[in-house]
Length: 57
Image (cartoon, rainbow, N blue to C red):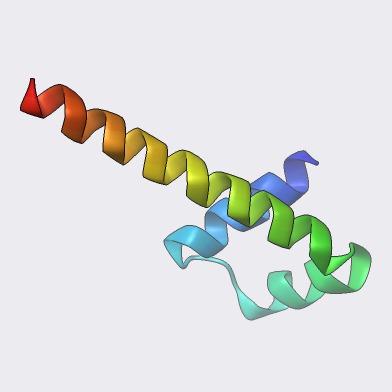
């Protein structure tokens, strides 16, 4: 699971190589990456919303 999280983070920042991306999708189901990506995107949105709310108060 840690490998999937690292891979998704690398993809978020745009620093993942094409070779690593292909290796990830050959070894693990893409649904796991999709799930982790959606969860991480939601966490990012919540963090930004909390920061904006704290800055407004």
